Image 1: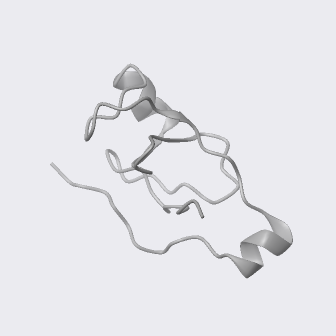
Image 2: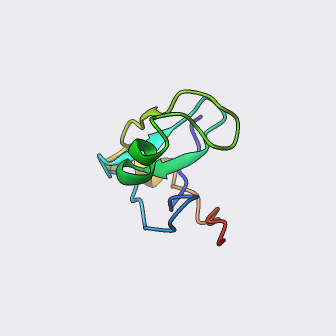
Length: 75
């Protein structure tokens, strides 16, 4: 199951499970749209392609809640 991380690893902005602006790589590194574009849609952690993250809402979100562990790495 996809881990729905709650924040952008680069800037720390909140990314809700239904956010359309969240981007992930194959290792589930998570970035906001602005930071993904700033890195040319390449993950700065692993070099993988950053793609739009699918959303999770309603019953599935209640059954499989989003992570609360923040991954922002302040500079």
